[in-house]
Length: 122
Image (cartoon, rainbow, N blue to C red; front, side, top):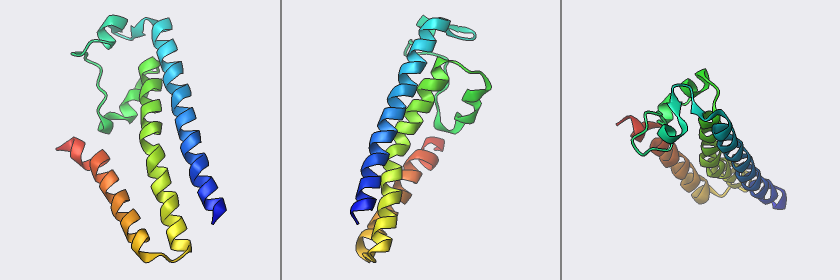
């Protein structure tokens, strides 16, 4: 079982490192480009910005490549890092036939998906 625990640990570390790289590259690109097409840098950083960052518009963000797109991707990777941990734990608990923690992990996964996918549409 130590191998599965190592995979879980590596998935968390890898997810955080990838998100740091993507967010950093996005910030650098945002400053190099001076904003995104149609919105200057001070407009992107404004609290009342017109930049749409809702989760259900994830694929629309890739219609134009910008620093905000990289930042958004880094945040999505960071959000899905603990989800990958829960998925790996489900595999671990299924392998050792621990039904209680398997059911609890599935409930946690369902709750995460409800919070990420369904609640933003309400």
